[in-house]
Length: 387
Image (cartoon, rainbow, N blue to C red; front, side):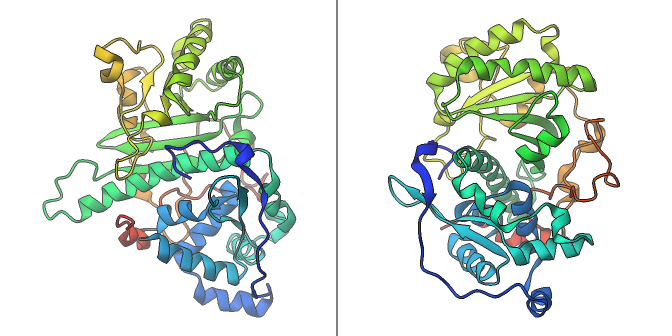
C-alpha cells in the first residue's frame, strides 16, 4: 500500500491461510533468551505495535530499516520468536503485504519493562488478532500509512544532511515529534471529538501540531464537516487552538468537501479556534522518491483555491501551515521534538500538558506513554533509501 493509492475496505476481506511455521513457546527460558536477542529497535517495534495495533511489513521497514529485505528478515525472526504475530489479508487484486500485530512474547517483554503483568496492558492474543477481521482495518492501515510516509521522508531528509560535510542542507532538524493512535485520542478527547490521530511535526525551525481526519471516500461529506463542531467544543473546553488536517483520497472529493467544510466552519461561534487545512493523496507526485504529507499539498480552509493562478501557488508544505494561522503558536515545550528522539525505550512522545489527559499515570498504571514515532537513535544509520 502507498499513500498515493487508495485501498478500499472491500479489498481486505479476511486473513489468507498460510503454512504453519515452527515457533518458540513463550516460556521463562525463552524470555531469558530474548533479553540478549532483542535490540533497541526491536523493543521500539513492540511499543509501536502496542500503540497502533497493526503495521504492515512495508510500513515497519520504511520506518526503521535500511532496506525491505533486511526488514523482512528481522521481522521473520521476531515472528519465529513469538515477539510479533502476522496475518495476510486476502486482496482482490495483487497480494497484500504481511500485517503484523503484537505477539505473546512481545507483550510479556513490554509488561516486564514497565513492571506490570501482561493483563495490566489490556493485551489478549485473540483480541490482537481480531483486527484482521475488523471492518475498519483499511482505515486503520491508511492512517498508519500516512504517518509512515511522513516519518520515512523525514528520516531520508535527515540522512541526506548527515552525509553532507558542511551540514548546510535545510531540513537538518526535521522530526516527527508525536504520533498518537486513534485509541489514545479517544481516551483523551473522546467525550468531545474522536480524531483519527494526533501528531507534531518540526522542520527548519517551524513547528506544527495537529489532529488528523483521514477520509477514504466512504463517509458522507456532511458527516465529515459535522465533526468541526466537536473540535470547536474541544478548543473551548481546553482553551487551546490545535489545527485540524483533513486528508482526502482525490482532488475532486477535496473540492466537494471544502465547500461543505467552509459552510460549517463559518457557522461556528469562534471559527478561528478551529484552523483547518485540506489535502488529497491525488496531489502527491507518484514519481517522487518519497512522496509524503510533508509535501506542498496543503490548502488552509480560509484560502480560496483560486487565490493564485491555477490555485497551485496557495498549496503549502506541512511545516509552513503555521504561517497561515498567525494566532496559533505551539507551546515552548514542543519547540524541538528532534532533541529527544527515542533511545532504547523511545522518548514518551507526549505533547505538552494541555489539561487534556483524563487521568494520571497513578490512576491508570496500564496506560503506557506513547512511543516516540522516530526510531531509536542507534538505528539512524538505517535511513538509506530503499533499493
